[in-house]
Amino acid sequence: MKVDGTPFRSIWLNEDGWSVDIIDQTRLPHEFKVERLTTLDQAAHAIKAMLVRGAPLIGATAAYGVCLGLREEASDAALRKIGDILIATRPTAVNLRWAIRAMQDLLLPLPESERVAAAYEKAAQICDEDVAINSAIGDHGLGVIEAIWEKKGKTGVVNILTHCNAGWLATVDWGTALSPIYKAHNKGIPVHVWVDETRPRNQGAHLTCWELGKHGVDHTLVVDNVGGHLMQHGQVDLCITGTDRTTAAGDVCNKIGTYLKALAAKDNNVPFYVALPGPTIDWEIDDGVKDIPIEIRDSHEVDFIQGKDSAGQVSEVRILPEESSSANYAFDVTPARLVTGLITERGVADASKEGLARLYDRLEYKAS
Ligand SMILES: CSC[C@@H](O)[C@@H](O)C(=O)COP(=O)(O)O
Image (cartoon, rainbow, N blue to C red; front, side, top):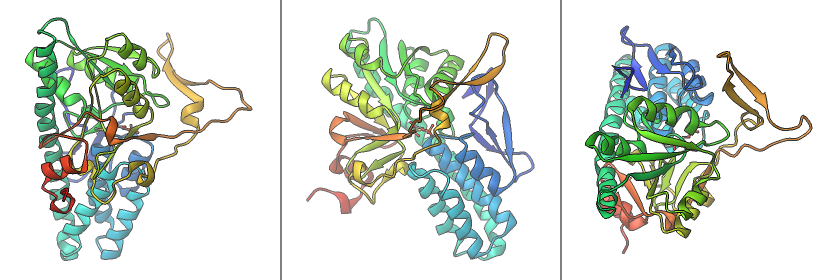
């Protein structure tokens, strides 16, 4: 995607051929700052402190984290330790585990002397594939938006509600939930996006609004509890969100508050779609509520809100009494029964074991 005319990915290999550049997403929308990663520790910190975030980008950053770690030491033990360090950064997004396993499976059988070069090649491949996957998600999701646009008699606008940030900043490029929106906008279909603020870190306000604005997509920020009201009043044609982990049975785990939007959508007959790349599917589990580890982050994110004052100064303010405490659950699980469809790079699947198995040809999961 372009930022003020310049094409950007969210992560890229620097010209020196080994260090890795990322956009520091904790500074957006107030400042666009590129940060350089040169060590495993820096890569792990970037994921944990959410300079990079979003399930696919976490996976891509972890892949390059393996490269940086191997430059320090390329033994079997080091490769395993690098994986452990990166896995410990964020527990919910399964793309992290997927990327590390993909790197280790490729690298462990190789001689130590070949590992660094092979790691960089694989990390670049993971990034390129992510871009292609997300573009394909956009093409399939475009079909969903087009169908709604036609049903509306091609009048007015298609109103889409999204939660958190599942745009190009959350992936290597294009995004998942926002990819169909970009494709629809590029095709001339009038879309308007209701952007959930997404407390506590406000990825909707900070990142989704920024992205959509840069691309010229009409959007309106709403606080997290507005969606149900909008749906009751016919102001949402469909919801599209991303997911950090999708079970083999189609349960989706996404940013906290997604479940409540899905419930409101069900009650109001609003289609609720979830967009995801194949690596976000955890084929090892069925029951998302029971089996997906939910990240609990530092309370500081709930207790303080960051913003820019009229003098242009970015700072944080505390929003609760000194003596009160808070809890910071980062994700929730939306059961498959509330999901209208899963928009993947292979097409739109029913949110069910059979639907996903058919699309991904996972014979062992096909319904008997
Ligand atoms: C394409 S990204 C899908 C999800 O990772 C996204 O919706 C999300 O919840 C991101 O959470 P974050 O905590 O900002 O990493």
